[in-house]
Each structure stands twice: as structure tokens, then as C-alpha cells.
Length: 228
Image 1 (tube, rainbow, N blue to C red):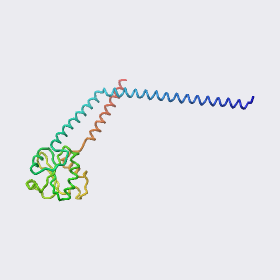
Image 2: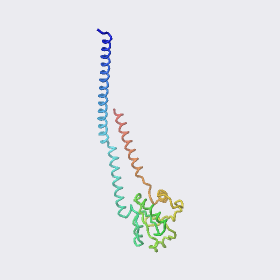
Image 3: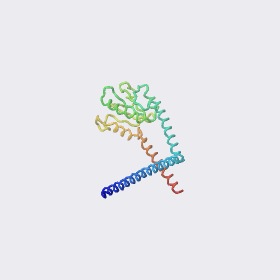
């Protein structure tokens, strides 16, 4: 018998057994991982079910829905009064427009003035964002009575009304950097400073709601831990 051949055969068999054992161990590890993942998924589902029944979270959700519904109703009421868009009004409609809403921005303009067109562009952009304020414009040439009554002498002239009373104004672009290429954000900042529009809080509210929810979840988890 060839001794070298026998040794080679035995060596091959031993190597084969090692490979087979390694394969079995690898397969076992895969099965264990699948079982662990399945167990984690079940636990997560159970945790979510428990959270859905949490009274504090239910109240947060109900309060949020109620607030959104109230806001939607207010927006609908404002739109019926002409909010949410930048509209031209006539001299005959002017008084009803400025007294019919709490906050009104009116641009006295002239069709031929380039700077009036610039102001139009920015006010139109802001009108859909700040629905709680009415944005209108009035052709100064066709409104001699109110031009005289409000002492409008230079255009563009933007007058701010509260409860039908003219409370502030800005003329030309002096308050906007005295240049034609000011940004809509610059005009928005000026109107915010004058208090005729409100800072948008949608993102802050959403963040606050999410943070409150996270705090509630953490509190519930801690309470469960203490009870255990």
C-alpha cells in the first residue's frame, strides 16, 4: 500500500470534515440571526400597539387635529374676504375692503411706474403666504379722493391698515435698502417689523408637536421600566 496516498486521502477527509462543520456553523448563525430579527419585530409591534393606547398621546393627537381644523376654518373665512391673493380694487370698493378685515396692506400705484411693478411682484408673492393679512392695490390715478384723503404724494406708496385705520406706511424703496433689487424676504422683514403680518409658525408648531410626542413616549417608557 502506498503510505503517501493513504496520508493524502486522510488529510483530504479531515479537510472535508472541517469545511462541512464550518458550513453547519454558518448556517446555524444565519438561523439564529433570523430568529432574533423576528423576535425584535414582534416586540416592536407590541410596543407600537401599547403606544397607540397611551392616553397622553391620544390627547396630543386630538389637540393637534382640533388646532388644524380651527386653522382651516379661519383660512376659509379669510379667503371669503379676499385674503390669500393680491387683488386690484376700485376706489368705490376701497373703503369696504380696508374696513372688512383686521389687517390690510394697500399699494397705491401707477401703471407706468417701474418701481410699482417691482412692488407688485413682491406683494403678490407674500399674499399667498400670509393669508391672515389682506393684500390689495389701488390705481392712484383712478382714486383721487383717497389719494388726497391719505396724503399719497409719492409712488409706490404702501399703506398699512388695522381695523380700517391707516397706522403706518412706507414710500418708495427707502426702507428697503434704497435699491430696486431688494428681495421678497427684505420686504417681508419690514412688514413683520411693522406688525402688519405675523411670523409663520407652522414649522415651529410641528417641531413642538413632535418633541411633545417624543417626551410622552419617553415618559411612558420610563414609567413602564419603574413598574417592572
